[in-house]
Image 1 (tube, rainbow, N blue to C red):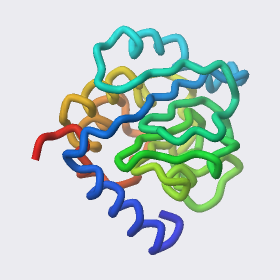
Image 2: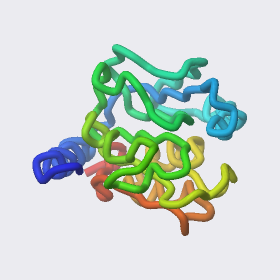
Image 3: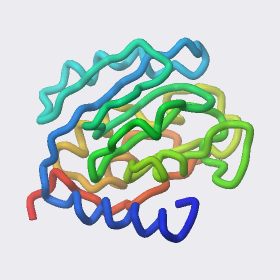
Image 4: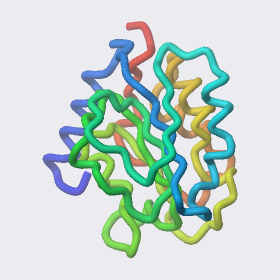
Length: 180
């Protein structure tokens, strides 16, 4: 988190989520940023899954005034409207960009902004990795694994084929879809 208080809040959200099987929605945004919108072509893989949550594909650069965010995947240098959202405990959110994993200042939004806004975990690249799909979380993989009971870090980690240029942040042991 960007502060001790934010870090504690992130941990508390992860613990509160455990075993709750929360209702919520996976928001998959297709943005106007062609280079960072690289995952959008695979969003159909998510909608084809049998999931215990809703999935919405949205053609927009931002999501606003939504109260049930369980997953939020987008591709932008910086994401507007986070302050208008309500993330469910255990929520995962990230933006495909070059330096979202640079946590203390860069010309692009830090992954910590997602945590400060209420997400329980995020991911970001730490250097310019190009937009190879294997270097970023694949929504179909992380959503399927997470909603079938894996912990946050198990599901998230398995969704990135080449994780060497990125960093995972958040509460790794959150497991909202695992029976207690």
